[in-house]
Amino acid sequence: MAIIGAPFRMPRFESLVWGKAVIDGKTYNYDIVILPDGRIEPRTTPYETLGSHTFTRDEIERLINAGAEVIVVGTGTSGMAKLSPEAQRLASERGVELVVQTSPLAINTYNWYAAQGRRVAALIHITC
Image (cartoon, rainbow, N blue to C red; front, side):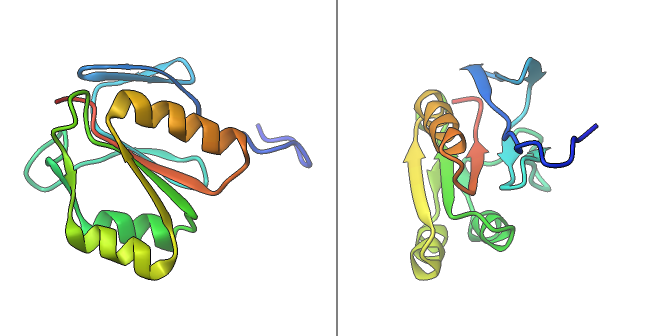
């Protein structure tokens, strides 16, 4: 239950290892999207339950339209996932800061922005 006037708290990553992320004590075994309002959703494509190895323009646009001023992209534990050039261009055109890092680094970056009270969103690939 939300308390009126209580500060809003964004989700916080506790850990990430290949195939598993822990956020606020809950384990996620799929790629994760955190919206700027704090909702956590699976990142799925029509083809894969863990998400593709390319972050698309549509994924970035959804987060921008949801109000993100910063988007943290985790490219996997080994950095195998990539951000499409179209996605990079869109963020630049809209003035949204993009931070692209391997997922173990990205979760710490996300936590830092969230603790600063920024309107941050995240796309985190949890495997390779």
